[in-house]
Image (cartoon, rainbow, N blue to C red; front, side, top):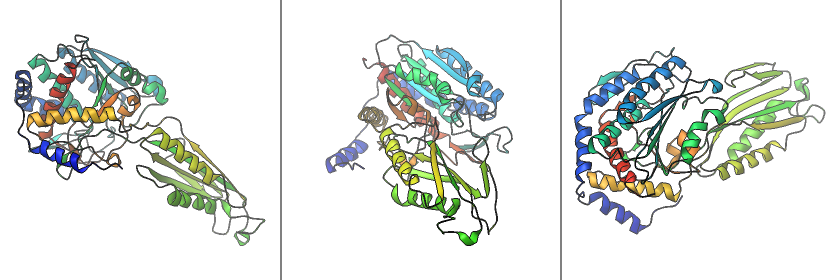
Length: 435
């Protein structure tokens, strides 16, 4: 980890306490528009949340897409629906706003779906003062509301007309379609056309401090399979019988635990099964097994995930895992398969740091505190990683929330205003910056 120098820390402290610079008249108009639209924004959030759009709810995701189309078209966007039946999902919203062709081309990223499917007991928006509970209230319907609020403010201030913006709202971020190459083709293509990518997933607030995110770790899955000679347990550890499948599985997983650890890397074992017979279902989430205490296990299976901060770290870790698997105990045979697809990493590049510096310039002028870069261990994988090799990016322009992905997910409604102001001014300044 690279720690900031003393000079950098002092500069950050001075920037955080300096008096805000005067906003331009259009920027003041954006602030006023966001403030005036508070209840309108919350009403939009309520409508979105009250439509179930679990990733597998094709009708629900499609309906939320229609609702977002209705918000974006009046702002001058050419909106189309990209169906994803070929990937087993509903589809994506692709919206394009053509500006004057001079400023930075921006890609805005969000998602229509939530983790809460139609059979979830958690289905309704409930406002509680400055907070609101609801499925996807923060992740990511709150983010989409911030996006719309910022664009409305730009339109009111006259800065939207010259802005070149493409929006991709995926319909399967929480449970991506397969094959992933089809499910993310539109997003990847949009990234190649952009100069800056802004991800409207949730704002992380760490110990009361709004954080800037310039990196996201990857997410990929692996499956480990062990086979061994069966037999009576009285022969275990002998040259003839060997150690059995479960002891070999335990050896491998414990070596993973002891030998793979390094900064920014995590690897989890999510499910293990073993015995005389052992199988995982097609989705790899349920197991069946049979065995007896006096029979040496013939088969064991484990499935887990791995999260890294770079492709190089992914490949290095996979090589270490393969080497561990390749030295089995006597009587056992082991293999590991790294599944195709998954989410790539978004590394913390200098270009991403420069975007965060631009955002902190906005914070200064709004009289808000500077946003330090978040430790990537505190963020999960996300769609922006699919474009990270092609374009500089910034994550966390959506709402602040807590309890995401669980009943009781709660959004901080005040964060809609704060984030929309930041986004509107940042996008306006990027649109005015020559390519």
